[in-house]
Each structure stands twice: as C-alpha cells, then as structure tokens.
Amino acid sequence: MLAIQGYFDGVTVKPLEKITAKPNQKVIITIMDEFVEPEDKTDKKGMKGVLSKYANPESAKKEKGAWERATVEKY
Image (cartoon, rainbow, N blue to C red):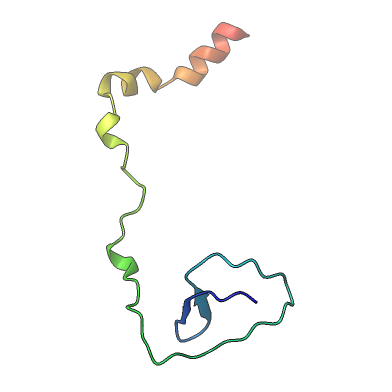
C-alpha cells in the first residue's frame, strides 16, 4: 500500500506527488479536515520573452532571409 498527498480542486482529486498506480487499480481516498492553499496560476509568467536578454539585434538583421540565402548557396 502506498500513501500520497493531494487535494480536491472542486472537480477532481489532484496528487501532490508522483503516482505509481496503474489504470483501473483500486485506490482508497481519505478526506482530511486540513486544507491546502490553492495555486494562483494568474501570477505565473509564461516562457514568452524569457531569452530576450540574450537577443542580438545585429543577428536579427542577418536572420531575415537566411533560409533563402542558404538554399541558394547549397542548391
């Protein structure tokens, strides 16, 4: 028997740890009197722009049309 922690989000039970159960394997769900703080997904930043500090404007100019130039040179 294995015990893991999780929480109920109002619709489904969400595990807080990796589950090693197989499909259709029976589980025992115990409802605790304790509560967890819900994750606030609105303040998480996406990955867009994460690497912008490494951008080189000179390279960006060279990249425009690079594919066309490479195919002409190769073929």
